[in-house]
Length: 325
Image 1 (cartoon, helix red, strand yellow):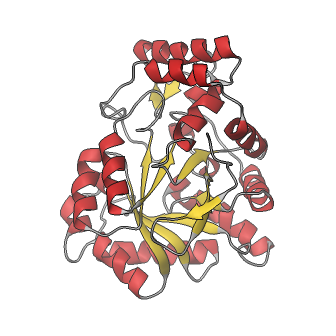
Image 2 (cartoon, rainbow, N blue to C red):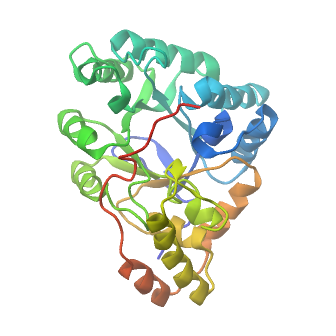
């Protein structure tokens, strides 16, 4: 049974409660190198307004999405409204210096200051350390004077309610998870109908009482838009093998009259280990579509077929050439 997407659940051991759906706002940062399309400032603000007017209470952004544009558009709408709507939870992230890749204690502090100013708030509900694998030196992130230590100081100071780890490479994340007492973990593209690279990490986080936020259930769009319309998989051109894998999902869905996007979304939502599923959106109308897909009636026979399909376990972004825009 897939839970209602608007149901509020505890965020791990924290006092925060979040909806089962989180809307990811990297796309509104206008990042054509990543997503293959641009998003204007007004369209981005319209998305944020629609989220605030909707039935969910959880959005995710980052200091470096679109070199700050995502947070800027969120902050502009918060100011329009005279403040963050009551009960709403913002998740954002500490990010490295995008020119030098430095990610030490001082850079982390500067990142928070930039986020607070840009968003127009005096504290952050959920703040992650983001993408340590791209730092100039991992020790700058994990050392005694590194970004993670500073993140936990921010929590002690009351500037942050909950702290998390949001990254990609599981082999980088696992040692960090073992060494630090995070409240939340965000993984992306690695627990989908196509790939289960993060499965062991998700199990470990559950054992530790860490809330798991599963982002990019559509594998960066191909499971939502379809293999015929979307040729990109995890921010890269999809291989012929990936297209064939998506086609097998689409064939099952076609036989049962199911939108593939609904199956991809509910694969994440129906898993009890996942606290909230983060879906990236760039248009206001995607909110209603997401909620419709989350509630779509998928028969047990379809799930049996979908779960019997082969899936990948290796890192889907192993060959990705990172582009920040």
